[in-house]
Image 1 (spheres, protein in one colour):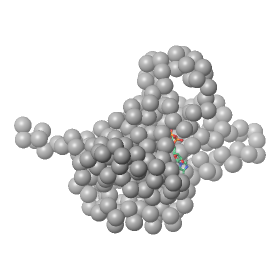
Image 2 (image 1 turned 90 degrees about the vertical axis):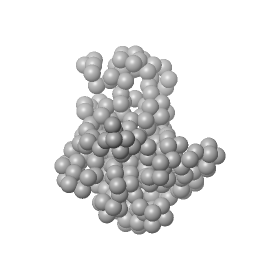
Image 3 (image 1 turned 60 degrees about the vertical axis):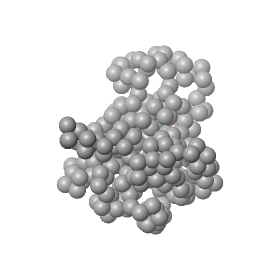
Image 4 (image 1 turned 135 degrees about the vertical axis):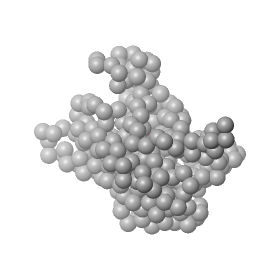
Length: 261
Ligand code: NAI
């Protein structure tokens, strides 16, 4: 029984960076981690929106804490300085959640395709490796270092008019698997969540009626999820007890990827 007791199911006292944490799944993850006693760096484009999430977390009186940092993950130099500042302020980095993202539709027949391709690949793939490289020296010092990359069911399949996003999300899965191999020797686990349809900023503009039709046709659980349902899977991946889970690609999609039509 002793071995089971050593596999802690708590992240109390751990430090975590979450990108894109001012909204949607990032915000839900920040709340959940703080409610579990972690010290969370809430990072996103806009300082005021990060501050607002930090205030919500403070008002909730969780056992953990949160601090805000403005960080545009498309800016390599900003990543280096903000990650260093977070590590110095919080006393290290145990957990990194690469979550920031957006969706810009793209038609391959149009010149404007590049206007989607470049920022999409930059923010939703290149930024992941930049964040990981900046955090790596600190993760190597941690007791149970954990990385979670947020991909998508679009990393396991594809939908029309969305190919830069689909390419980036497939890339996130490849990056996760490759780095799980390379970082295993340092005891760092690297896993990947593939959310299905979730009610967040990204899906806000989809009319409710369309959401209902889509969910009934495609999702065995017949609904969109709320961001907290994904945050709980992210938490499961970063627990000290998730000690032999690495390179995993985990759909959190209500069964979407099971169905062919
Ligand atoms: P959201 O729009 O609610 O949150 C995304 C956050 O990322 C926003 O606060 C935004 O400001 C931030 N962000 C965008 N560009 C950034 C940049 N350059 N630097 C830093 N932050 C930036 O959307 P959601 O859905 O919570 O998105 C989180 C992740 O989940 C994204 O990677 C998205 O691709 C992924 N996802 C979302 C799904 C959904 O149905 N909502 C399904 C599958 C994956």
